[in-house]
Image (cartoon, helix red, strand yellow):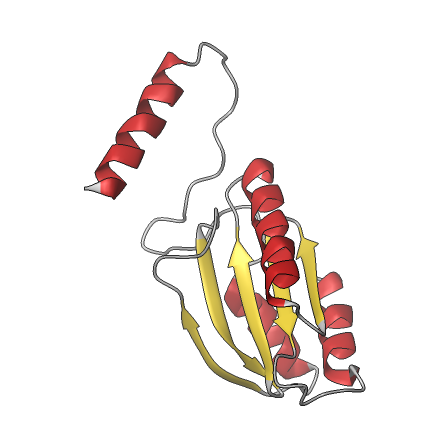
Length: 145
């Protein structure tokens, strides 16, 4: 019921808006991925090719915040989420939400980065990796995509 109301409000806002602007990219047919950005499976493959172990990655349904598609799992024990966004506004809101959550939860070690309209969020909740070596390697690989 709540989702229907939100959808109705959003549709009404879109119809009522007289601006003619290009629509954000849509998910690829037959897939939840977003066109025009790095896909989560590409990020995971790049990490694996760099020698990082990925474990337990699965799509999040529904994706958090304003993301169109996300996968969550672990990279060498580091809690990691990779999300694809359909627009610049959505990615900005998503990154702000991550930072707000970190402040609220008093996160010790974490990073949020973007490549095109894809984000990588890595948090060492368990403090398994105090040197930051894994997160550093993850960020280097991700920033090259």
